[in-house]
Length: 411
Image 1: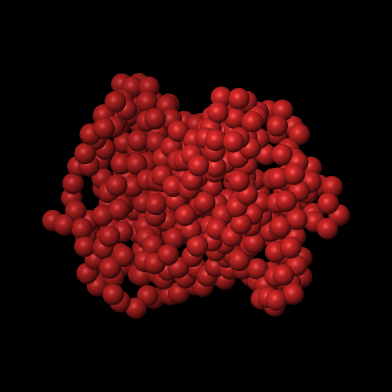
Image 2: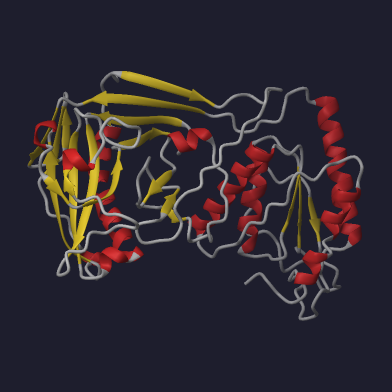
Protein backbone atom coordinates (compact mmCIF):
# COMPACT_ATOMS: atom_id res chain seq x y z
CA UNK A 1 0.00 0.00 0.00
CA UNK A 2 1.15 3.49 -0.77
CA UNK A 3 3.62 3.33 -3.68
CA UNK A 4 2.31 3.18 -7.21
CA UNK A 5 3.65 3.75 -10.72
CA UNK A 6 2.45 7.34 -11.00
CA UNK A 7 4.21 8.51 -7.80
CA UNK A 8 7.36 6.37 -7.73
CA UNK A 9 10.55 8.43 -7.96
CA UNK A 10 12.73 6.77 -10.59
CA UNK A 11 16.51 6.97 -10.69
CA UNK A 12 16.14 9.50 -13.45
CA UNK A 13 13.90 11.59 -11.20
CA UNK A 14 16.54 11.68 -8.46
CA UNK A 15 19.14 12.52 -11.10
CA UNK A 16 17.04 15.52 -12.14
CA UNK A 17 15.42 16.31 -8.76
CA UNK A 18 13.58 19.63 -9.21
CA UNK A 19 13.75 20.54 -5.51
CA UNK A 20 17.49 20.02 -5.23
CA UNK A 21 18.02 21.99 -8.42
CA UNK A 22 15.82 24.83 -7.18
CA UNK A 23 17.58 25.09 -3.82
CA UNK A 24 21.05 24.89 -5.37
CA UNK A 25 20.24 27.62 -7.88
CA UNK A 26 18.45 29.98 -5.47
CA UNK A 27 20.89 32.65 -4.25
CA UNK A 28 18.89 33.24 -1.06
CA UNK A 29 19.32 29.76 0.41
CA UNK A 30 22.18 27.32 0.90
CA UNK A 31 21.83 23.54 0.68
CA UNK A 32 23.60 22.09 3.74
CA UNK A 33 22.86 18.52 2.74
CA UNK A 34 20.28 16.00 1.56
CA UNK A 35 19.14 13.44 4.12
CA UNK A 36 18.05 10.14 2.56
CA UNK A 37 15.88 8.14 5.00
CA UNK A 38 14.41 4.73 4.24
CA UNK A 39 10.85 3.60 4.95
CA UNK A 40 10.11 0.52 7.03
CA UNK A 41 6.96 -1.53 7.52
CA UNK A 42 7.72 -1.74 11.26
CA UNK A 43 6.47 1.03 13.54
CA UNK A 44 9.47 0.94 15.89
CA UNK A 45 11.82 1.15 12.92
CA UNK A 46 9.83 4.11 11.59
CA UNK A 47 10.38 5.84 14.93
CA UNK A 48 14.04 4.87 14.89
CA UNK A 49 14.57 6.39 11.44
CA UNK A 50 12.71 9.59 12.35
CA UNK A 51 14.82 10.05 15.48
CA UNK A 52 18.01 9.60 13.48
CA UNK A 53 16.83 12.28 11.07
CA UNK A 54 16.29 14.47 14.15
CA UNK A 55 19.90 13.82 15.15
CA UNK A 56 21.00 14.97 11.72
CA UNK A 57 18.93 18.14 12.11
CA UNK A 58 20.85 18.79 15.33
CA UNK A 59 24.14 18.30 13.52
CA UNK A 60 23.39 20.18 10.29
CA UNK A 61 21.38 22.96 12.00
CA UNK A 62 19.11 23.87 9.07
CA UNK A 63 16.96 27.00 9.21
CA UNK A 64 14.26 25.31 7.15
CA UNK A 65 13.37 21.85 5.89
CA UNK A 66 11.57 20.45 2.83
CA UNK A 67 10.33 16.88 3.34
CA UNK A 68 9.44 14.84 0.24
CA UNK A 69 7.92 11.39 -0.16
CA UNK A 70 6.87 9.53 -3.29
CA UNK A 71 4.41 7.35 -1.38
CA UNK A 72 1.26 7.60 0.69
CA UNK A 73 -0.89 5.55 3.09
CA UNK A 74 1.37 3.70 5.52
CA UNK A 75 4.36 5.69 4.26
CA UNK A 76 2.77 8.91 5.45
CA UNK A 77 3.58 7.87 9.02
CA UNK A 78 7.31 8.12 8.22
CA UNK A 79 6.65 11.39 6.38
CA UNK A 80 4.81 13.00 9.31
CA UNK A 81 7.22 11.69 11.96
CA UNK A 82 10.13 13.41 10.18
CA UNK A 83 8.18 16.66 9.96
CA UNK A 84 7.50 16.33 13.69
CA UNK A 85 11.23 16.09 14.37
CA UNK A 86 11.66 19.41 12.58
CA UNK A 87 8.69 20.96 14.38
CA UNK A 88 9.96 19.94 17.81
CA UNK A 89 13.10 21.93 17.08
CA UNK A 90 11.22 24.98 15.83
CA UNK A 91 12.42 24.45 12.27
CA UNK A 92 9.91 25.64 9.61
CA UNK A 93 8.98 22.96 7.12
CA UNK A 94 7.18 22.28 3.86
CA UNK A 95 5.96 18.74 3.13
CA UNK A 96 5.46 17.38 -0.39
CA UNK A 97 3.50 14.21 -1.16
CA UNK A 98 0.71 12.73 -3.24
CA UNK A 99 -2.61 13.25 -1.46
CA UNK A 100 -5.50 13.68 -3.90
CA UNK A 101 -8.47 11.65 -2.65
CA UNK A 102 -6.75 8.31 -2.22
CA UNK A 103 -3.66 9.48 -0.34
CA UNK A 104 -5.20 11.35 2.55
CA UNK A 105 -3.08 11.27 5.70
CA UNK A 106 -3.45 8.23 7.94
CA UNK A 107 -1.59 10.08 10.70
CA UNK A 108 -1.50 13.78 11.44
CA UNK A 109 0.34 16.13 13.78
CA UNK A 110 0.19 19.64 15.16
CA UNK A 111 3.57 20.25 13.51
CA UNK A 112 2.21 19.94 9.97
CA UNK A 113 2.52 23.49 8.67
CA UNK A 114 2.39 23.45 4.89
CA UNK A 115 1.69 20.50 2.58
CA UNK A 116 1.94 20.53 -1.21
CA UNK A 117 -0.19 17.96 -3.03
CA UNK A 118 1.63 16.33 -5.94
CA UNK A 119 -1.59 14.96 -7.46
CA UNK A 120 -1.76 15.83 -11.16
CA UNK A 121 -4.50 13.43 -12.29
CA UNK A 122 -8.16 14.34 -12.62
CA UNK A 123 -9.52 11.53 -10.43
CA UNK A 124 -7.44 12.06 -7.28
CA UNK A 125 -6.42 8.39 -7.34
CA UNK A 126 -3.19 6.55 -8.02
CA UNK A 127 -2.76 5.44 -11.62
CA UNK A 128 -0.51 3.04 -13.49
CA UNK A 129 0.97 5.79 -15.64
CA UNK A 130 4.58 6.21 -14.58
CA UNK A 131 5.37 9.82 -13.71
CA UNK A 132 1.80 11.13 -13.86
CA UNK A 133 2.00 12.35 -10.28
CA UNK A 134 5.66 13.25 -10.19
CA UNK A 135 6.91 16.30 -8.34
CA UNK A 136 7.31 19.04 -10.98
CA UNK A 137 9.53 22.07 -11.34
CA UNK A 138 6.53 24.24 -10.49
CA UNK A 139 5.99 22.23 -7.28
CA UNK A 140 9.64 22.75 -6.40
CA UNK A 141 9.41 26.48 -7.04
CA UNK A 142 6.34 26.70 -4.78
CA UNK A 143 8.01 24.77 -1.99
CA UNK A 144 11.15 26.90 -1.95
CA UNK A 145 9.20 30.15 -2.24
CA UNK A 146 6.89 29.19 0.64
CA UNK A 147 9.80 28.12 2.82
CA UNK A 148 11.69 31.34 2.14
CA UNK A 149 8.61 33.31 3.11
CA UNK A 150 8.36 31.34 6.36
CA UNK A 151 12.01 32.09 7.12
CA UNK A 152 11.52 35.81 6.47
CA UNK A 153 8.51 35.90 8.77
CA UNK A 154 10.34 34.00 11.47
CA UNK A 155 13.31 36.35 11.28
CA UNK A 156 11.02 39.39 11.46
CA UNK A 157 8.55 38.24 14.09
CA UNK A 158 10.38 35.68 16.16
CA UNK A 159 13.48 36.81 18.02
CA UNK A 160 14.01 33.36 19.54
CA UNK A 161 16.57 31.10 17.96
CA UNK A 162 15.82 27.76 16.38
CA UNK A 163 15.88 25.04 19.03
CA UNK A 164 18.33 22.31 18.14
CA UNK A 165 17.43 19.93 20.96
CA UNK A 166 19.85 21.31 23.55
CA UNK A 167 20.13 18.33 25.89
CA UNK A 168 21.19 17.80 29.48
CA UNK A 169 22.29 14.40 30.73
CA UNK A 170 22.56 13.65 34.45
CA UNK A 171 24.48 10.54 35.54
CA UNK A 172 23.82 9.48 39.15
CA UNK A 173 26.23 6.96 40.69
CA UNK A 174 25.28 4.55 43.48
CA UNK A 175 28.11 2.79 45.31
CA UNK A 176 28.03 -0.92 46.17
CA UNK A 177 30.19 -2.40 48.92
CA UNK A 178 29.05 -5.97 48.36
CA UNK A 179 27.71 -8.11 45.49
CA UNK A 180 26.37 -11.56 46.44
CA UNK A 181 24.05 -14.26 45.13
CA UNK A 182 20.61 -14.59 46.68
CA UNK A 183 17.10 -15.93 46.21
CA UNK A 184 16.06 -12.85 44.27
CA UNK A 185 17.61 -9.84 42.59
CA UNK A 186 17.43 -6.73 44.76
CA UNK A 187 19.44 -3.80 46.08
CA UNK A 188 19.49 -3.26 49.82
CA UNK A 189 21.63 -0.43 51.12
CA UNK A 190 25.06 -0.90 49.56
CA UNK A 191 24.51 -4.57 48.72
CA UNK A 192 23.43 -5.99 45.38
CA UNK A 193 21.78 -9.39 45.58
CA UNK A 194 21.86 -11.24 42.26
CA UNK A 195 19.40 -14.08 41.81
CA UNK A 196 21.29 -17.34 41.44
CA UNK A 197 20.01 -18.70 38.16
CA UNK A 198 20.80 -20.56 34.99
CA UNK A 199 19.60 -18.24 32.19
CA UNK A 200 17.25 -19.83 29.69
CA UNK A 201 18.99 -20.63 26.43
CA UNK A 202 15.61 -20.99 24.74
CA UNK A 203 15.60 -19.40 21.31
CA UNK A 204 19.40 -19.26 21.31
CA UNK A 205 20.00 -23.01 21.62
CA UNK A 206 21.10 -23.22 18.00
CA UNK A 207 24.27 -21.35 18.92
CA UNK A 208 24.64 -21.58 22.71
CA UNK A 209 25.17 -24.83 24.63
CA UNK A 210 25.36 -23.36 28.13
CA UNK A 211 26.12 -20.25 30.18
CA UNK A 212 27.44 -20.01 33.72
CA UNK A 213 27.10 -16.91 35.89
CA UNK A 214 29.60 -16.25 38.66
CA UNK A 215 30.82 -13.40 40.83
CA UNK A 216 34.52 -12.54 40.87
CA UNK A 217 35.47 -10.27 43.78
CA UNK A 218 38.70 -8.24 43.73
CA UNK A 219 40.36 -10.93 45.87
CA UNK A 220 39.78 -13.70 43.31
CA UNK A 221 41.48 -12.29 40.23
CA UNK A 222 43.96 -15.13 39.88
CA UNK A 223 41.43 -17.45 38.25
CA UNK A 224 41.64 -18.37 34.59
CA UNK A 225 39.01 -17.06 32.19
CA UNK A 226 38.05 -17.67 28.58
CA UNK A 227 38.43 -15.05 25.84
CA UNK A 228 36.81 -11.72 26.68
CA UNK A 229 33.78 -10.69 24.67
CA UNK A 230 32.96 -7.47 26.51
CA UNK A 231 32.96 -5.38 29.68
CA UNK A 232 29.90 -3.21 30.30
CA UNK A 233 28.44 -1.09 33.11
CA UNK A 234 25.13 -1.70 34.85
CA UNK A 235 23.09 1.42 34.13
CA UNK A 236 19.49 2.32 33.39
CA UNK A 237 17.37 5.27 32.36
CA UNK A 238 15.48 6.77 35.28
CA UNK A 239 13.96 9.44 33.05
CA UNK A 240 14.29 10.42 29.40
CA UNK A 241 15.85 8.59 26.49
CA UNK A 242 19.47 7.86 25.65
CA UNK A 243 21.41 11.11 25.65
CA UNK A 244 19.16 13.11 27.97
CA UNK A 245 17.31 12.92 31.27
CA UNK A 246 18.63 10.95 34.24
CA UNK A 247 20.71 7.77 34.18
CA UNK A 248 21.40 5.61 37.24
CA UNK A 249 24.75 3.79 37.37
CA UNK A 250 26.03 1.17 39.82
CA UNK A 251 29.60 1.61 41.04
CA UNK A 252 31.50 -1.36 42.38
CA UNK A 253 30.26 -3.90 39.82
CA UNK A 254 31.04 -4.49 36.14
CA UNK A 255 29.62 -7.06 33.74
CA UNK A 256 32.18 -9.34 32.06
CA UNK A 257 31.30 -11.68 29.18
CA UNK A 258 33.62 -14.49 28.09
CA UNK A 259 33.25 -17.60 25.97
CA UNK A 260 34.68 -20.74 24.41
CA UNK A 261 33.47 -23.33 21.92
CA UNK A 262 32.70 -26.88 22.96
CA UNK A 263 34.62 -29.65 21.23
CA UNK A 264 37.53 -27.75 19.68
CA UNK A 265 37.66 -25.38 22.67
CA UNK A 266 38.18 -22.53 20.23
CA UNK A 267 38.47 -19.17 22.01
CA UNK A 268 36.39 -16.54 20.15
CA UNK A 269 38.64 -13.81 18.82
CA UNK A 270 39.31 -11.68 15.78
CA UNK A 271 43.08 -11.27 15.86
CA UNK A 272 44.15 -12.69 19.23
CA UNK A 273 42.15 -14.32 22.02
CA UNK A 274 42.51 -13.11 25.61
CA UNK A 275 42.04 -16.30 27.63
CA UNK A 276 44.30 -16.86 30.62
CA UNK A 277 44.81 -15.64 34.15
CA UNK A 278 42.52 -12.66 34.78
CA UNK A 279 45.21 -10.56 36.43
CA UNK A 280 47.47 -11.10 33.44
CA UNK A 281 44.90 -10.73 30.65
CA UNK A 282 43.10 -7.56 31.79
CA UNK A 283 44.68 -4.20 32.48
CA UNK A 284 42.37 -2.79 35.14
CA UNK A 285 41.50 0.85 35.88
CA UNK A 286 41.32 2.08 32.29
CA UNK A 287 38.27 3.73 30.67
CA UNK A 288 37.36 0.40 29.03
CA UNK A 289 38.08 -2.05 31.87
CA UNK A 290 36.76 -2.49 35.43
CA UNK A 291 38.26 -0.74 38.43
CA UNK A 292 40.52 -2.82 40.66
CA UNK A 293 37.92 -2.72 43.45
CA UNK A 294 34.99 -3.86 41.25
CA UNK A 295 33.22 -7.17 41.62
CA UNK A 296 32.78 -8.80 38.21
CA UNK A 297 29.38 -10.22 37.28
CA UNK A 298 30.79 -12.91 34.99
CA UNK A 299 28.86 -14.56 32.15
CA UNK A 300 30.85 -17.46 30.69
CA UNK A 301 29.36 -18.94 27.50
CA UNK A 302 29.88 -22.36 26.01
CA UNK A 303 29.21 -21.95 22.29
CA UNK A 304 28.22 -24.89 20.16
CA UNK A 305 31.00 -26.01 17.86
CA UNK A 306 31.73 -23.33 15.28
CA UNK A 307 29.40 -20.70 16.75
CA UNK A 308 32.03 -18.77 18.65
CA UNK A 309 32.93 -17.80 15.10
CA UNK A 310 29.51 -16.64 13.88
CA UNK A 311 27.84 -13.31 14.39
CA UNK A 312 24.66 -15.12 15.43
CA UNK A 313 26.48 -16.88 18.26
CA UNK A 314 28.19 -13.76 19.53
CA UNK A 315 24.98 -11.72 19.31
CA UNK A 316 23.10 -14.42 21.23
CA UNK A 317 25.61 -14.25 24.08
CA UNK A 318 25.19 -10.50 24.39
CA UNK A 319 21.40 -10.74 24.32
CA UNK A 320 21.23 -13.43 27.01
CA UNK A 321 23.55 -11.33 29.17
CA UNK A 322 21.42 -8.24 28.71
CA UNK A 323 18.23 -10.07 29.66
CA UNK A 324 19.75 -11.01 33.02
CA UNK A 325 21.21 -7.55 33.62
CA UNK A 326 17.77 -6.05 32.93
CA UNK A 327 16.57 -7.62 36.20
CA UNK A 328 19.17 -5.55 38.04
CA UNK A 329 18.24 -2.43 36.08
CA UNK A 330 14.65 -2.76 37.23
CA UNK A 331 15.82 -2.56 40.85
CA UNK A 332 18.27 0.24 40.11
CA UNK A 333 15.55 2.27 38.40
CA UNK A 334 13.46 2.29 41.58
CA UNK A 335 16.36 3.09 43.92
CA UNK A 336 15.35 5.90 46.28
CA UNK A 337 18.59 6.95 47.95
CA UNK A 338 20.99 9.81 47.42
CA UNK A 339 23.70 9.12 44.81
CA UNK A 340 27.32 9.22 45.94
CA UNK A 341 28.22 11.27 42.89
CA UNK A 342 26.44 13.16 40.12
CA UNK A 343 27.77 14.26 36.74
CA UNK A 344 25.89 16.68 34.49
CA UNK A 345 26.66 17.01 30.79
CA UNK A 346 25.06 19.87 28.89
CA UNK A 347 25.13 20.19 25.15
CA UNK A 348 26.49 23.64 24.42
CA UNK A 349 24.34 26.34 22.89
CA UNK A 350 24.90 27.29 19.27
CA UNK A 351 27.63 29.87 19.90
CA UNK A 352 30.21 31.27 17.47
CA UNK A 353 32.91 29.13 19.08
CA UNK A 354 34.98 26.77 16.94
CA UNK A 355 33.07 23.62 16.05
CA UNK A 356 34.77 20.24 16.51
CA UNK A 357 33.66 16.92 15.03
CA UNK A 358 34.68 13.59 16.58
CA UNK A 359 34.71 10.62 14.21
CA UNK A 360 34.63 7.15 15.79
CA UNK A 361 35.66 4.45 13.34
CA UNK A 362 34.18 1.30 14.88
CA UNK A 363 34.04 -2.45 14.26
CA UNK A 364 31.67 -3.44 11.48
CA UNK A 365 32.67 -6.83 10.07
CA UNK A 366 30.70 -9.19 12.27
CA UNK A 367 31.76 -12.15 14.45
CA UNK A 368 33.88 -10.62 17.19
CA UNK A 369 34.37 -7.41 15.24
CA UNK A 370 30.98 -5.77 15.29
CA UNK A 371 29.27 -2.73 16.81
CA UNK A 372 25.62 -2.28 17.74
CA UNK A 373 23.87 1.04 18.41
CA UNK A 374 20.76 2.50 20.06
CA UNK A 375 20.02 -0.09 22.78
CA UNK A 376 16.92 0.14 24.93
CA UNK A 377 19.06 0.85 27.99
CA UNK A 378 22.48 2.50 28.47
CA UNK A 379 25.31 0.31 27.15
CA UNK A 380 22.86 -2.58 26.72
CA UNK A 381 22.31 -4.84 23.76
CA UNK A 382 18.57 -5.56 23.51
CA UNK A 383 16.95 -3.26 20.96
CA UNK A 384 20.16 -2.43 19.12
CA UNK A 385 20.80 -2.14 15.41
CA UNK A 386 24.09 -3.51 14.13
CA UNK A 387 26.13 -1.06 12.08
CA UNK A 388 26.21 -3.92 9.57
CA UNK A 389 22.41 -3.66 9.27
CA UNK A 390 22.82 -0.29 7.58
CA UNK A 391 25.96 -1.25 5.66
CA UNK A 392 28.20 0.69 8.05
CA UNK A 393 26.78 3.97 6.79
CA UNK A 394 27.80 6.85 9.08
CA UNK A 395 25.29 7.71 11.80
CA UNK A 396 25.21 11.04 13.62
CA UNK A 397 24.76 10.93 17.40
CA UNK A 398 25.33 13.55 20.06
CA UNK A 399 28.13 13.53 22.61
CA UNK A 400 25.54 13.01 25.33
CA UNK A 401 24.18 9.96 23.54
CA UNK A 402 27.69 8.48 23.46
CA UNK A 403 28.08 9.24 27.17
CA UNK A 404 24.75 7.53 27.79
CA UNK A 405 25.73 4.21 26.23
CA UNK A 406 24.37 4.50 22.69
CA UNK A 407 27.23 2.29 21.40
CA UNK A 408 27.56 -1.38 22.34
CA UNK A 409 30.68 -3.26 21.29
CA UNK A 410 30.57 -6.95 20.38
CA UNK A 411 34.34 -7.39 20.45
